[in-house]
Amino acid sequence: MPRILPFIILIMFGCSSKKYAGNFAVGKFRIPIIIQDKAVNRVAYFAEEDVAEIWPKFIGQFSFNDSIYFNGESEKRESVTKDQFLWEQRALKFDTLSSDGLQVFADYESSVIYCDKAVDTSAHFFYPVYLVNETADPKIFIGKDSYGFAIQEALDTTGYPRWYAIEGRGFDFCGNGYFRRKILPNQFIMFLFPKYAGSETTLLRVRVKVGEDLVVSKAFSGVINPKQFNIRKGGWFYDELKETKGASANWMFYGAAIKEIDKF
View 1: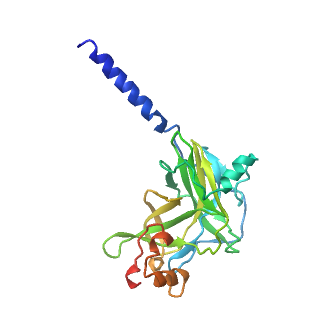
View 2: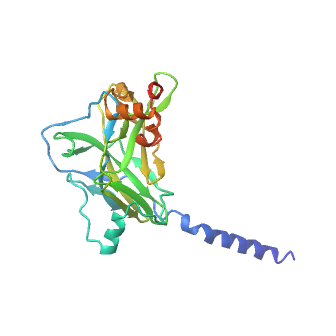
View 3: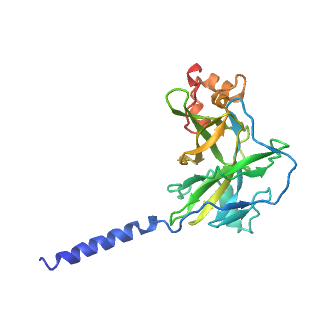
C-alpha cells in the first residue's frame, strides 16, 4: 500500500492541473504607446461644474501590441463573415460567453487629442482605457452605437474619504444600436475618457459595465473640479432621480455612490 500512494497523489495532481488549465492566462497585457500625428490648433481639458453625462468613445478591438496608431477615427476592421456580423448585432440575445476574468487598465499618464464631433466641435484631452482579456477563453463585450457603458468616479477627501461618481450614463432615448464583440485571448477593447480641468488632485477609478457584470479598474491619480460631485438641478440626472426618489441611481451610475443622493 505505501508504494501505491505516490501514484495516487500524482494522478490527483494531474487531474487537478487539467481541470484548471483553461483558466490560466495565455499572455500578459502591457499598456501600449498611442501614436498620433494629427496636428490641432487648440486643445483643452474638459471643464465641468457637476456630474457629467458621458458616452465613452469606443475606439476598437486590438490584439496585444506595443503601440497603437490613432488618427482620430475608430478602428477600420478587416472584413468579417456574415455569421460573425449577425452575431455582433444580436447583442441582447442569450449567449454562453461571459465577461468573467476581464480586467480594466487605465492609462491616465497618456494624453490623446480627440474631437468627438457628435457632442463637440473642439479638440480635448482624453486618456485611453483598456478592457483586457488575459484568460484562455473568449469573452463578451457589449456596446451601443460608438460607445461603451462606463464612468469615472473619484475619491472625495473633504470629510471621511469615499468614492463618488463624477460621471453618469449619457441620456439616450433610442433602444437600437446595441452590438457585441467577442474578445479573444490576448485581445482588448480600447475606449477614450475625458481629462478634466480642476484644482484638486485625487484618486480616480473607471467602472465598466458589460451586460449584467461590472469591472472596476485600480485607483490612479487624476485631476478634477470638486464641484463635479454635484448633481445639476434641472438636468436629466436630477429629474430622473427626483422622479424615482433616488432608485434610478444604481443603473445611471453603474453602482457608484452619489454624494447628494440624500436630497432625493
